[in-house]
Length: 617
Image (cartoon, rainbow, N blue to C red; front, top):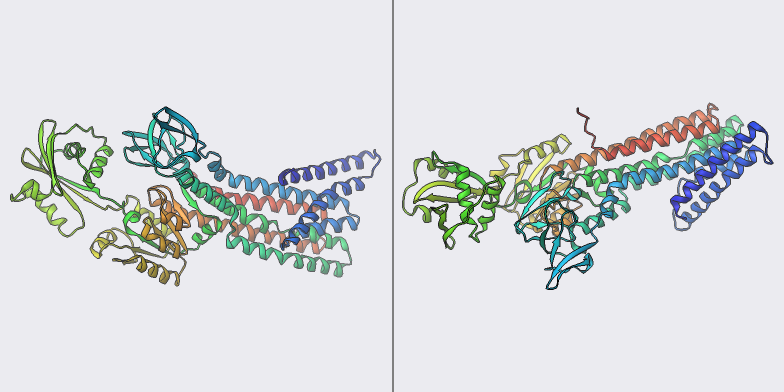
């Protein structure tokens, strides 16, 4: 019999004994008196609790459950078996309620582990074979059928695939992936069957990392919870002192018993862990992985936020910033022609150009007569039209810029961007500007962090001052640190941490030391597991900055709920103790009152599972 089943059995025995005792008292039929039945129903709970306390004491722990043991034992010794059985029901019911609350709070986390991939379909010379995911090796070609979980991290081999990533990232709509894109284990094939190449073993893949962090979230105690545990220990001597004083002053031992009955510190025992597990679970549903309750509590107290620039505040690649089209020409048609030509290129910009075209749902054509000029550009024919794309020198040679293109050339003269000139039929038709663009949600995310109480925000980057200022001009930042080496980043984080609890958000390998040095490290982990994810306390699985603000809001709300539950619960228990000491509450009534307090505290702690947003019709 496991511990949870034992708790339910003890509760059932106590409730059954209470009911039978009342039946015997009313009918006066039966071989046993009601008091005897209530005593018998109480003894299993007393015995189980005594064994539990001795077992904990043997390994160096002493819990406040001793108050419940003292109150039940005192009730039996003082000839109050009805009070004893009600306390037994209260205690056993509290433990069952705790199991329910923990199970409710951990449900979302457990759902992640329960759906872990188990098998993979590996392609070989003899066809396709089903194997356990533990046998998948890096480089294996795997087949993923419609509706199946991706078994390991890998690279898409087919032209496209549709993936349901909601369980991993929290994104509700399927995401479209193209050839060469990174795929993560634990996501679901929401489209047709496709092939992928394994890039990591099962135990090194994204989903395995999630499972490990779920285990940590359920076992690591936050400092706040440990503080609550230590504080709860002071309640035992305090309770004995108050109950003894009540007995001494009044001369009535029943008052002392009533004080003991209402003094169980369930608000301290239950509220903090239930709330923190609920907060971690809520964050997981939003695509935010927190490495235990300690990370959540630390995040709740952050006052300074430091952001890496590339890949955190910005997209982290050469993205299309602007298309300047010759008057009378359609920008989308120009992009369609350029992307069609770039299908034959191996240049680093080719993927960005093609991705930009597909993002606008443009149909690409097959290029002909393509000739690539290494480091300068390429030319060819698309839709029977001669097209040249590349540097200004390749496309224009010594020709001057037309008037329509001069303003853009001046605007980007000293900016860290790449400019692709496109000519059709020997005439300049458009100029494409690529650069590391600001994330779409960066401004709103930083604004929400301000609203959440982050007082100071800093951009920390290894890029030069010009590139840093170009991005910072668009954001509400308090300071910029440019040209920073990994050592400089650590020094900056340490200096800020000395002034206030500090969060560092980054995505690159060079950010890992700074993430580890911060009070809380937040890794932008959407592009795969990296050293930064290993060093971080919190990992954002979506390729957006908004979840960073969501993580801070969830953490602060969770800590506030835990604190609120503890303070309210202890205050109510304190008032009940005072009333019991003055003879206003009987032991039986005190047990019922305390049970009501316990239920209220747990229900309040479970609010951490919600998002705290007002309901809107």
